[in-house]
Length: 258
Image (tube, rainbow, N blue to C red; front, side):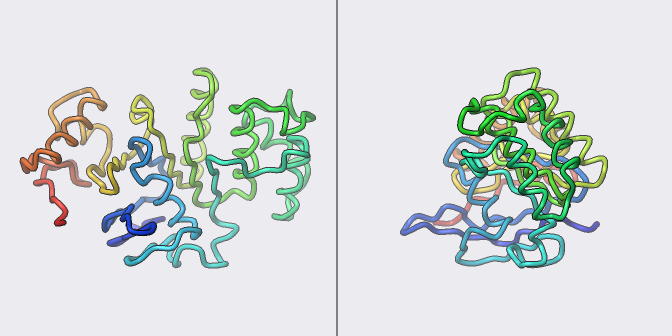
């Protein structure tokens, strides 16, 4: 099957510290893949590699059949960062219309993106006056412009109220049904069940890569948070306990040599 993203043996170092330890993963097209793990686990570093703004020491990162970061991917990949990525001295609408113009899109398409993220009532508000949750949604509206084939979202639901979080996840799945591939990071485990596939990363290692149901089955629990805890404890203990594969079958956890 064609892969939207394919990462092989990816190693990233910052100074003397190795952040990612030879990660290999493939993301299939047209689905919502969750990238979960605690803060500092390497989620953002991996996402930065996918969009081509992070240097890495070894391995390969291929996106839509091309090396990550190549000019041909600029209009095919949307990226929502955790840090501010839009202009504080412009209104929500002005930001959306500016970014729409870069894609040769109409003002109507920009306004639709603002509406889709629930900011129609704040369209004329300066970004500098928005709440943290509103700021994230304004950035998301700009990331959605141009109908990217891959949408990389770094903790897009942080600071959102439960109703809006539910609306955003519904929108993510609608985008996936239309053919967009989404990679969504989170450190909130209750969002794991909303994903089609899950990647669990901890301390720079990928310790799970499968569907939520397969991870539940392989770890013998219906609770995903407990499933993740069992995988982590088994890895730390070096017990060789089963780890889910992409087929939902179990295989021994491979420990990284020091």
